[in-house]
Length: 172
Image 1 (cartoon, rainbow, N blue to C red):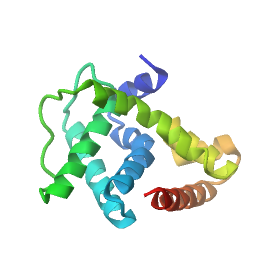
Image 2: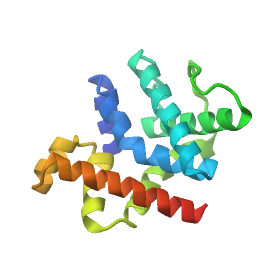
Image 3: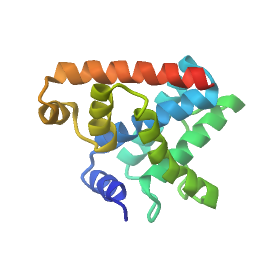
């Protein structure tokens, strides 16, 4: 089990679904914007993915033996498919998750992809995003570690998300 998997499992066990989702927020947003080829639609779909994951895991749904990052990838994929098919994206998740080998590979790659995306950011924004989205720290903890204020952390995260949207729009 990787360090990320152990962190995810710990957050799930302690009921910190909000913190767990925060670590995947950028990956979900990036995949949704890239998938829809629209910042506006991508943000809407990403919000649906986050809501779907939060609601289901808050209710106690777990997929034993499957890393959370893979579940995030699969739910993002399902929600994008529902969006394009014109289906509701707020329906409950299946009770069982069966994955193809390429889905597991994609879930693993998503963490690496996030690090590649962050490398495009200015140093302060990258460092802040790594603490919040990769390490899973709260904005308050990130501020303390960086020796800055919570407000500065919020501003850096805002600007980082804006830059990443622009980078992804340029790629699409």
